[in-house]
Length: 223
Image (cartoon, rainbow, N blue to C red; front, side, top):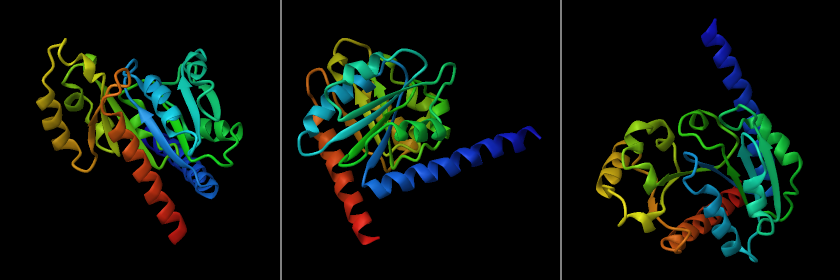
């Protein structure tokens, strides 16, 4: 019976996720679900990414946290539209919460929707929000063993971002171990080393975003 309940919940979530995706497709929006442990630099990344995409491309953001609006406030003035979603005790965003968040956003003219998920390396990986792509962050201070310990987060990633690489020379960190572990769980996602603080690697991340946007436009025109 418990298995049936879980399956029922996931099926209901997936149905809403499909509707979210259809809705964003209709608006011509490319949605990227950003996931990581707390403190890995999701908001810092968006603080640098969104201004770099303007004015040619506009961004909206759904920010997920248990409490406060602090991350949304940090992004204010950069994104064309921002909505904070507080989950209370929830360890991840759900498709229904994203659907409610979409109701508060003006998607007209938006090129990218960044969904900043709740900081967690386990729960968000299993939940489809209706996103088109998944960006998973792994920061140097977290240690070099996280890919091996939390493979379910990295397996479905569209891109893996090794953040805070400006700290590599200050911490005991085996970068090769990360690459080796990634090669075991995900052979399709590029691994991009970057530091929003120094700007290192941001050009590769922005180029990846632009390429995904271009490919999405081709797919939508074909359909």
